Length: 258
Image (cartoon, rainbow, N blue to C red):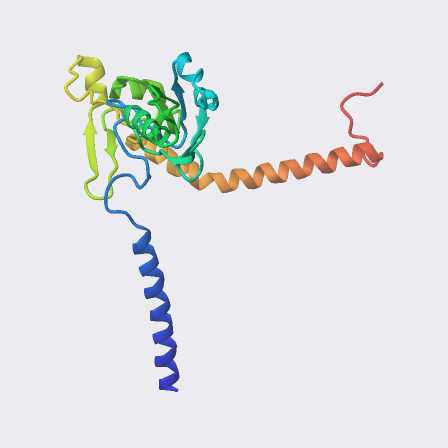
Protein backbone atom coordinates (compact mmCIF):
# COMPACT_ATOMS: atom_id res chain seq x y z
CA UNK A 1 0.00 0.00 0.00
CA UNK A 2 2.82 2.38 0.91
CA UNK A 3 4.53 1.69 -2.41
CA UNK A 4 1.34 2.58 -4.26
CA UNK A 5 1.04 5.85 -2.36
CA UNK A 6 4.67 6.74 -3.09
CA UNK A 7 4.15 5.97 -6.79
CA UNK A 8 1.03 8.15 -6.89
CA UNK A 9 2.86 10.97 -5.12
CA UNK A 10 5.75 10.73 -7.59
CA UNK A 11 3.34 10.94 -10.53
CA UNK A 12 1.64 14.04 -9.09
CA UNK A 13 5.00 15.68 -8.42
CA UNK A 14 6.23 14.97 -11.95
CA UNK A 15 3.03 16.40 -13.46
CA UNK A 16 3.37 19.55 -11.38
CA UNK A 17 7.02 19.89 -12.32
CA UNK A 18 6.23 19.53 -16.02
CA UNK A 19 3.57 22.26 -15.82
CA UNK A 20 5.93 24.53 -13.89
CA UNK A 21 8.58 23.98 -16.53
CA UNK A 22 6.15 24.94 -19.31
CA UNK A 23 5.13 28.07 -17.37
CA UNK A 24 8.77 29.06 -16.92
CA UNK A 25 9.31 28.67 -20.66
CA UNK A 26 6.41 31.03 -21.36
CA UNK A 27 7.65 33.73 -19.00
CA UNK A 28 9.77 36.60 -20.27
CA UNK A 29 12.64 38.37 -18.58
CA UNK A 30 12.30 41.95 -19.83
CA UNK A 31 9.71 44.39 -21.08
CA UNK A 32 5.95 44.04 -21.29
CA UNK A 33 5.88 40.65 -22.97
CA UNK A 34 4.87 41.78 -26.47
CA UNK A 35 6.99 41.23 -29.56
CA UNK A 36 6.87 44.89 -30.55
CA UNK A 37 8.76 47.11 -28.13
CA UNK A 38 9.89 50.70 -28.26
CA UNK A 39 9.15 54.26 -27.23
CA UNK A 40 6.51 55.50 -29.65
CA UNK A 41 6.67 59.03 -28.23
CA UNK A 42 10.26 59.35 -29.45
CA UNK A 43 10.19 57.26 -32.62
CA UNK A 44 6.99 55.64 -33.80
CA UNK A 45 7.18 51.91 -34.45
CA UNK A 46 4.89 49.34 -36.03
CA UNK A 47 2.64 47.71 -33.45
CA UNK A 48 0.00 45.04 -33.75
CA UNK A 49 -2.88 47.55 -33.99
CA UNK A 50 -1.21 49.83 -36.53
CA UNK A 51 -1.42 50.33 -40.28
CA UNK A 52 1.64 50.86 -42.44
CA UNK A 53 1.87 52.55 -45.84
CA UNK A 54 4.71 53.78 -48.03
CA UNK A 55 5.19 56.99 -49.97
CA UNK A 56 6.63 56.18 -53.39
CA UNK A 57 7.52 58.83 -56.02
CA UNK A 58 5.38 58.55 -59.18
CA UNK A 59 8.51 58.30 -61.31
CA UNK A 60 9.39 55.01 -59.61
CA UNK A 61 6.05 53.48 -60.57
CA UNK A 62 6.77 54.25 -64.23
CA UNK A 63 9.86 52.04 -64.20
CA UNK A 64 9.48 48.62 -65.88
CA UNK A 65 8.45 45.98 -63.37
CA UNK A 66 7.65 48.47 -60.61
CA UNK A 67 3.96 48.90 -61.35
CA UNK A 68 2.95 46.54 -58.53
CA UNK A 69 4.63 48.76 -55.96
CA UNK A 70 1.53 50.96 -55.98
CA UNK A 71 0.08 48.43 -53.53
CA UNK A 72 2.50 49.72 -50.91
CA UNK A 73 0.81 53.13 -50.96
CA UNK A 74 -2.35 51.56 -49.51
CA UNK A 75 -2.43 51.23 -45.70
CA UNK A 76 -2.21 47.60 -44.67
CA UNK A 77 -2.50 45.99 -41.22
CA UNK A 78 0.13 43.79 -39.71
CA UNK A 79 -0.57 40.09 -40.18
CA UNK A 80 -0.93 37.91 -37.12
CA UNK A 81 2.59 36.56 -37.65
CA UNK A 82 4.03 40.11 -37.64
CA UNK A 83 4.55 40.40 -41.39
CA UNK A 84 3.47 42.84 -44.09
CA UNK A 85 3.06 42.09 -47.79
CA UNK A 86 5.66 43.55 -50.16
CA UNK A 87 4.99 43.16 -53.90
CA UNK A 88 7.53 41.04 -55.78
CA UNK A 89 8.83 39.76 -52.42
CA UNK A 90 5.95 38.41 -50.36
CA UNK A 91 5.54 38.49 -46.57
CA UNK A 92 8.27 40.37 -44.73
CA UNK A 93 8.54 40.44 -40.95
CA UNK A 94 8.11 44.06 -39.85
CA UNK A 95 6.57 44.07 -36.35
CA UNK A 96 8.34 46.43 -33.95
CA UNK A 97 10.36 48.28 -36.59
CA UNK A 98 10.40 52.06 -36.77
CA UNK A 99 9.47 54.02 -39.87
CA UNK A 100 13.13 54.47 -40.86
CA UNK A 101 13.81 50.76 -40.33
CA UNK A 102 10.74 49.80 -42.35
CA UNK A 103 11.81 51.97 -45.29
CA UNK A 104 15.35 50.54 -45.21
CA UNK A 105 14.03 46.97 -44.95
CA UNK A 106 11.66 47.25 -47.93
CA UNK A 107 14.24 49.14 -49.95
CA UNK A 108 16.78 46.36 -49.38
CA UNK A 109 14.28 43.63 -50.24
CA UNK A 110 13.25 45.31 -53.49
CA UNK A 111 16.86 45.91 -54.51
CA UNK A 112 17.29 42.13 -54.81
CA UNK A 113 14.60 41.84 -57.50
CA UNK A 114 14.77 45.21 -59.26
CA UNK A 115 17.67 46.72 -61.14
CA UNK A 116 17.39 50.10 -59.42
CA UNK A 117 16.94 51.54 -55.94
CA UNK A 118 13.42 52.42 -54.85
CA UNK A 119 13.26 55.69 -52.94
CA UNK A 120 10.38 55.33 -50.48
CA UNK A 121 9.29 56.43 -47.02
CA UNK A 122 7.26 54.49 -44.48
CA UNK A 123 4.36 55.88 -42.46
CA UNK A 124 2.88 54.12 -39.43
CA UNK A 125 -0.66 55.07 -38.44
CA UNK A 126 -2.61 53.71 -35.51
CA UNK A 127 -3.10 53.98 -31.78
CA UNK A 128 -0.82 53.20 -28.88
CA UNK A 129 -2.47 52.79 -25.48
CA UNK A 130 -2.09 53.34 -21.76
CA UNK A 131 -4.34 51.60 -19.24
CA UNK A 132 -6.63 53.09 -16.60
CA UNK A 133 -8.02 51.04 -13.71
CA UNK A 134 -9.54 51.59 -10.29
CA UNK A 135 -11.89 54.53 -9.81
CA UNK A 136 -11.37 55.82 -13.35
CA UNK A 137 -14.51 56.55 -15.36
CA UNK A 138 -12.91 55.16 -18.52
CA UNK A 139 -11.30 51.82 -17.74
CA UNK A 140 -9.09 49.70 -19.90
CA UNK A 141 -6.90 50.78 -22.84
CA UNK A 142 -7.08 54.50 -23.67
CA UNK A 143 -5.44 55.93 -26.82
CA UNK A 144 -2.11 57.65 -26.18
CA UNK A 145 -1.62 61.03 -27.82
CA UNK A 146 1.56 62.94 -28.56
CA UNK A 147 3.22 64.63 -25.57
CA UNK A 148 0.64 63.28 -23.10
CA UNK A 149 1.42 63.95 -19.44
CA UNK A 150 -0.03 62.54 -16.24
CA UNK A 151 -2.53 65.39 -15.85
CA UNK A 152 -3.68 64.87 -19.44
CA UNK A 153 -4.12 61.14 -18.81
CA UNK A 154 -6.08 61.69 -15.58
CA UNK A 155 -8.50 64.09 -17.24
CA UNK A 156 -8.77 61.82 -20.28
CA UNK A 157 -9.68 58.82 -18.10
CA UNK A 158 -11.78 60.85 -15.64
CA UNK A 159 -12.55 59.76 -12.09
CA UNK A 160 -15.51 58.73 -9.97
CA UNK A 161 -16.64 60.56 -6.78
CA UNK A 162 -14.98 57.77 -4.76
CA UNK A 163 -11.50 58.30 -6.23
CA UNK A 164 -8.63 59.33 -3.99
CA UNK A 165 -6.77 61.93 -6.04
CA UNK A 166 -4.27 62.32 -3.23
CA UNK A 167 -2.76 58.93 -4.11
CA UNK A 168 -2.72 58.24 -7.82
CA UNK A 169 -0.37 55.49 -8.92
CA UNK A 170 1.56 55.63 -12.19
CA UNK A 171 2.85 52.13 -12.88
CA UNK A 172 5.62 51.42 -15.39
CA UNK A 173 5.26 47.65 -15.99
CA UNK A 174 8.32 45.54 -16.65
CA UNK A 175 9.19 41.88 -16.15
CA UNK A 176 12.46 42.74 -14.39
CA UNK A 177 12.26 46.24 -12.92
CA UNK A 178 8.68 47.54 -12.62
CA UNK A 179 8.27 51.05 -11.28
CA UNK A 180 5.37 52.34 -9.16
CA UNK A 181 5.15 56.10 -8.53
CA UNK A 182 2.78 57.42 -5.83
CA UNK A 183 1.57 60.89 -6.87
CA UNK A 184 -0.53 63.47 -5.03
CA UNK A 185 -2.66 64.60 -7.93
CA UNK A 186 -4.87 66.81 -5.76
CA UNK A 187 -1.86 68.85 -4.63
CA UNK A 188 -0.62 69.13 -8.20
CA UNK A 189 -3.98 70.45 -9.39
CA UNK A 190 -4.50 72.88 -6.50
CA UNK A 191 -0.96 74.28 -6.23
CA UNK A 192 0.26 74.03 -9.82
CA UNK A 193 3.48 72.31 -8.73
CA UNK A 194 4.11 70.04 -11.71
CA UNK A 195 7.35 68.28 -10.77
CA UNK A 196 5.46 64.97 -10.76
CA UNK A 197 3.63 65.59 -14.03
CA UNK A 198 5.44 62.72 -15.74
CA UNK A 199 5.29 61.86 -19.42
CA UNK A 200 2.93 58.98 -20.20
CA UNK A 201 4.47 56.20 -22.21
CA UNK A 202 2.80 53.34 -24.04
CA UNK A 203 1.41 50.59 -21.79
CA UNK A 204 1.72 52.66 -18.63
CA UNK A 205 -0.93 51.80 -16.02
CA UNK A 206 -2.84 54.57 -14.27
CA UNK A 207 -4.42 53.33 -11.04
CA UNK A 208 -6.85 55.54 -9.12
CA UNK A 209 -7.57 53.96 -5.73
CA UNK A 210 -10.72 54.73 -3.73
CA UNK A 211 -10.76 56.77 -0.53
CA UNK A 212 -11.35 54.97 2.77
CA UNK A 213 -15.07 55.68 2.60
CA UNK A 214 -15.02 54.76 -1.07
CA UNK A 215 -13.39 51.42 -0.16
CA UNK A 216 -16.17 50.79 2.39
CA UNK A 217 -18.79 51.71 -0.23
CA UNK A 218 -17.26 49.33 -2.78
CA UNK A 219 -17.15 46.59 -0.17
CA UNK A 220 -20.86 46.97 0.59
CA UNK A 221 -21.56 47.13 -3.15
CA UNK A 222 -19.86 43.77 -3.68
CA UNK A 223 -21.62 42.26 -0.68
CA UNK A 224 -25.04 43.43 -1.84
CA UNK A 225 -24.52 42.72 -5.54
CA UNK A 226 -25.64 39.02 -5.29
CA UNK A 227 -28.73 40.14 -3.33
CA UNK A 228 -29.56 42.76 -5.95
CA UNK A 229 -29.13 40.18 -8.71
CA UNK A 230 -31.48 37.79 -6.93
CA UNK A 231 -34.09 40.54 -6.42
CA UNK A 232 -33.88 41.57 -10.09
CA UNK A 233 -34.28 37.95 -11.14
CA UNK A 234 -37.33 37.48 -8.90
CA UNK A 235 -38.91 40.71 -10.12
CA UNK A 236 -38.24 39.74 -13.72
CA UNK A 237 -39.83 36.33 -13.20
CA UNK A 238 -42.85 37.96 -11.52
CA UNK A 239 -43.28 40.38 -14.43
CA UNK A 240 -43.09 37.55 -16.96
CA UNK A 241 -45.65 35.56 -14.99
CA UNK A 242 -47.99 38.55 -14.74
CA UNK A 243 -47.68 39.27 -18.46
CA UNK A 244 -48.44 35.63 -19.29
CA UNK A 245 -51.50 35.62 -17.05
CA UNK A 246 -52.74 38.87 -18.58
CA UNK A 247 -52.33 37.57 -22.13
CA UNK A 248 -54.05 34.27 -21.41
CA UNK A 249 -56.91 35.92 -19.49
CA UNK A 250 -56.04 34.26 -16.19
CA UNK A 251 -55.61 37.60 -14.48
CA UNK A 252 -57.89 40.63 -14.49
CA UNK A 253 -55.46 42.87 -12.64
CA UNK A 254 -55.19 45.40 -15.41
CA UNK A 255 -54.41 49.03 -14.77
CA UNK A 256 -56.48 50.32 -17.67
CA UNK A 257 -59.85 49.20 -18.80
CA UNK A 258 -61.72 50.31 -21.90
